[in-house]
Length: 338
Image 1 (cartoon, rainbow, N blue to C red):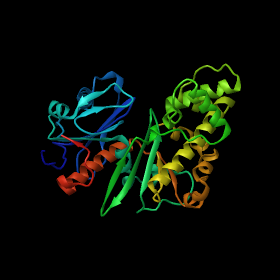
Image 2: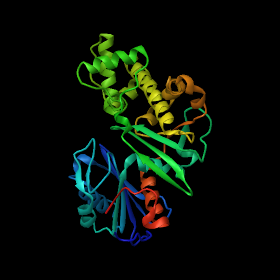
Image 3: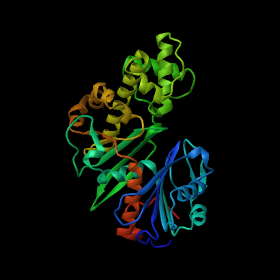
Image 4: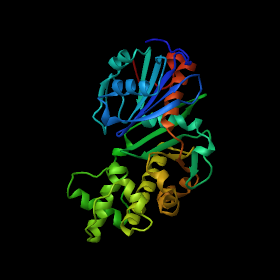
């Protein structure tokens, strides 16, 4: 494995956040610096990571080839073969490294990258959704509905932070109230199980809208997540959809906080929530977050915070490379390396 060299304008680091829909790229030109020349590409337009990265470097007018890269991907990471959960991308990390001419390529889970971004976020990057201010030194949880539902933790380890990625979005959905149980029963009539991600993501929001229309006995046209968010103030069905969505998300976030002992706060990302901040604040989100029987008082002391920063996973990918630069090969968190 090649040693990691510090980034500079002549040999920058490449950072990327690859989701089920979009691929975001940026360049880091100094240790500890924020990514620059950030661009978004449509993942469906490219065969895989190498092709998309090459297209990005051409579009960004990069005059120097990157020396190293950290790529955050939406899916499990382990071994050389990387398969995204909600995308057709399937690639070899080693072959991609060689094709791009990199000295080193790190591949980490996208929510591990989002977790690593948390210590670098500033107050303007965050919106409080309830509870006290986050405890700076406590373990943290991060989750977010986007194309899918990602979950990770971040725990302190000496003078560094260690992300704990997982596939928590694929646990069973947390349906508690009668309307939620009716939705789950309706969906179970068509599929064997209903996971949290089935409802708590962009496609899940559309699925929830359809199920609630059926329960209302209405013939509602299909709507995308963006259309539901835009129509909710005037459309009663869309408003109910977002309310049920927020309550389910609050219950899921509370469960995540309990499982990870996230006294440092639960941070929410993804592309949906920043569009509906007033709705989240007025919804049953926080009530359901805290409503955990004997653990209610415990959860009242846990902050819930929305991430509104642009491309925070790129910050996390840069933070991972900075960790390797500081600690070398023995860095605490060792994802796929090539």
